[in-house]
Amino acid sequence: AQKVTQAQTEISVVEKEDVTLDCVYETRDTTYYLFWYKQPPSGELVFLIRRNSFDEQNEISGRYSWNFQKSTSSFNFTITASQVVDSAVYFCARPPTDSWGKLQFGAGTQVVVTP
Amino acid sequence: DTAVSQTPKYLVTQMGNDKSIKCEQNLGHDTMYWYKQDSKKFLKIMFSYNNKELIINETVPNRFSPKSPDKAHLNLHINSLELGDSAVYFCASSTGTGGSQPQHFGDGTRLSIL
Image (cartoon, rainbow over all chains, first blue to last red; front, side, top):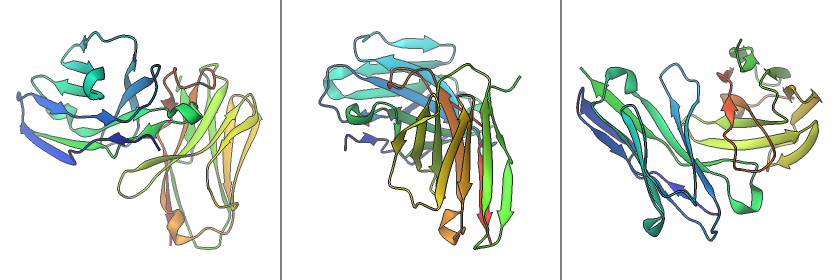
């Protein structure tokens, strides 16, 4: 199976620090999509971003930014000037080529932001 | 105006019982999914339906039976509940059957088996 690996289990930061979440994926494909989701303590899963393999530009949305590096098969996520509300589990995911409809999730990274 | 709604939010029941979880989406999507999240937060797909047709059926015990009466609804029925079924079950929906579109998730149903 083409895995999605989030090696960091938990990251703890103090408010206003930056935090970067790593995501490394396996692929044999030239066309693929990658996603990030957020799961706050309340439990819902919130879609954050989609990236396709053809678009190598980094993306910024407010305090969130994503760094896509095809050469290293990584799609990292940075929260700048973290806030307590950023405390959540963050998941990286991609649909495997042999079954596009299903999302294969990484194990998730728990981010804890303390005041 | 909730996009993907699941009921109930919490379900506490005894081993051996049969229970159902309902899911409805008002996004106009044609594909719906069920995922299971275990106690370690690991998310795994169970089923997917496109326009009421089953398109993904992972290795799930046949005690789990999805039903899609129309493309806006996907229910999950579980027979003879076991302790290992305790988990959070998420419904999701998307446009199309491919992996290019984001899936939008409901708030989850926390199932606890006593």
